[in-house]
Image (cartoon, rainbow, N blue to C red; front, side):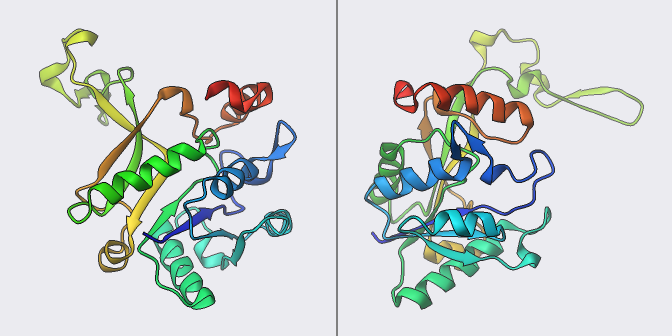
Length: 235
C-alpha cells in the first residue's frame, strides 16, 4: 500500500498564534512530526501544506515536499478536506503516481512515535476491503459523556446521557476520544465522499501518555515539559 503522508500546518491560529513554528525544547513544533514521518519508513512521500514562509524555510532542510497553501484554504473556517484533496492531486501530478491512501499527521500532536504510524497503516492493511479509514483515539473515563450537559437559554441543564447520569465511574461503558495524532483514509473514499473521516472507521487505540493536542497556551507549556525532558522516556 502506497501512503502519502500529509502534514497540514497553516500559519493562523487563534488559540496559539504561529504555534506550528514555535520552539519547543529548541525545535519548532512541526519538527517533531516531520522527524517521525521521515523515520517511520512506511510513507511513500511526505508533503507539508502550509501558508507559513517560516515553515517553508525550515522544511527545506528535510526530505519532504512543500505545498504552498493558498490563503483561501488557510482560514479558521476552511474545511481541511479541501486542502487534503488538493495536496493529493498536487503530489500525484508532481510524482506521477497514484496513492492508495493518505495519512494526515497534525503537527499539533507531537507525541506520536514511528511505531504508531506503522501500526496504524498495518491496521488498515489488515482490514481492507471493508474499512477505508483509521483514526487514532485514546480511552477516556473522565470526562465521560454521562457527566456532560448542554445548557439552554434559561440555564437549564440537559444530560447527554440521562440513562447513565447516576452511574458510578466503574459502571460506565468506556468511551474513546479522537486525539488528533493519526488519520488514514483511502484515496477512493477521500475523493468519492469528500471526507477525511468516513464510516465505518477503525479505531487505532493509543495509550493516554501519548495524548497531547495543542490548542491553548497551557498545552504549549505541557509540551515543553514533556519534550524538554527526553522524548524517549515516554516510549
